[in-house]
Image (cartoon, rainbow, N blue to C red):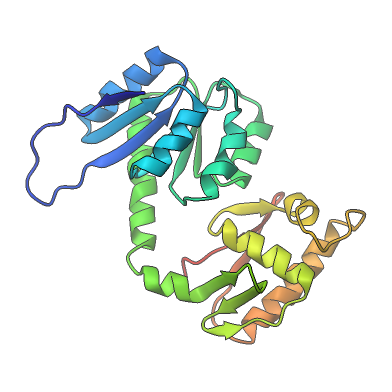
Length: 241
C-alpha cells in the first residue's frame, strides 16, 4: 500500500478528493498518484486486489481507479464485490482493448472505462465529471431513498411509500435493477441471475416482465419513466428524475 498526501494548504471548508488506485504496475501508479496529487487529490494505492477491498472497508474514498489485470483476482470480478457494500464511483483503467471487457465492466457497475495509455489530464477531467454528477445526485438523498426500498427478507419493494404487488420473477428483476441503479443491466444478467425465471426462457421474456413492472410503477407515478431501455444491452433504472 502506498499513500501520497503532500497537498498544498487549502482554505477552511475545502474538500480534498480521496482516490483509491488498485493497480499492480507500480510505475504507472506512481505517475498517476503524483499527477492527481497536484490536482488536490489524496491518493492511496494498492497493488493487491484483496488489499484494495480491505482498504475500502477501512477508509472513506470518493472514487476508485481499477485496473483489470491484477494478481489473484481479475478486476471484473472485483466490481461486484465492491458493489456489494458501496456505490463508490469506479473508473476502469485497463490495457485490455477487448470491447467485451468494457461492456461487462460497465454492466457490473463501473462508471467509466479508460483504455491505456491515456493522458493523466483526461483522467482528472473524468474524475471531476463523475464526482460532479454524483454530488448532484446526492444533494437530496432522502428523495432517492424514498423512491425504491428493497426488503430482502420479505422480498418486497416499496416505491414512493407504497408496496408494489410483484410476482417472484418481477421482484428478482426489479431488485437487480435497483441494486445497479443508474447503471445498465443486460437482459442476459436479468435472465440468468433470477431465481424464479426458467433458464430456458427466451430473452424476450425479460421485456415482458419489464413491461409488467413499468405498469405497476406507472400506477403510482404517471409523470416519470424510471426503467429505460439501453439499446443493444438491456435496461437501466434511473433515480435521477
